[in-house]
Image (cartoon, rainbow, N blue to C red):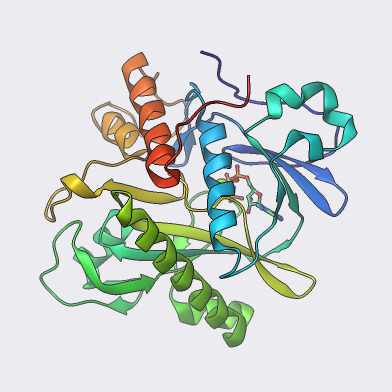
Length: 298
Ligand SMILES: Nc1ncnc2c1ncn2[C@@H]1O[C@H](COP(=O)(O)OP(=O)(O)OP(=O)(O)O)[C@@H](O)[C@H]1O
Ligand SMILES: [Mg+2]
């Protein structure tokens, strides 16, 4: 099975992230999701088969489902819509690539948490609150919160993103914009969590990114994928322990068994960890969309 770790196209490069290679097409961007996986902010050396395609096609599914709630950057994932300059590479790009509107990015990660996990759980244990939002005492790992909470983080140019309070965000971008991002984030989460639970998946938390296009707030980047969210199997959920998940928790759990200081180079992922991760990503796609995952790309 082939994986794609990087790609060159005859277009100017807009940026290279942990997962995506993005190319400039004037007022549009061509965003290619590779099969790279990052854990603890370090990119693994091995790719996860079909991961880029799962991320792109699952995002496209959610962009379609949520565009009445808030508009988004997606123009098309159909290779026929891509610039002529990449015509020869359409097969490689198919499924993993989105043509989007270039937006002015708002440099905050808009995180919504419905359950207590990850850095939220750590914060709660230390302070009784998450990013300044006070919570009842006595909550356990993976407990459902009384209501979903908005816990933004700054997008650090280098290194780890840092949780912040809504106050910090309001001071940086203005009260009106900050509150409309909070409202949009909570509305998107509620819609998606309701859809997902009917399909057997708990969305424990998720991260949105927003941008401005012609003065209007739109959703950008990826949407409600296993890279940007914690997806738990509802059938196996029990508070107090770490639930079975469809995201990179499987890789993180394996990495925690290794002697590694979480700086590059990372340990070599064994074949069963690669295959297990690929399977979980594909299951997330299939459960959420209700479709069998048949790769478009080659
Ligand atoms: N429509 C858009 N307009 C402008 N920038 C966008 C748009 N959609 C996504 N982006 C940005 O493109 C990049 C996507 O690449 P990738 O997901 O690999 O980055 P990343 O490793 O998550 O990096 P970052 O820390 O910058 O988010 C992100 O920086 C994201 O904020
Ligand atoms: Mg990203």
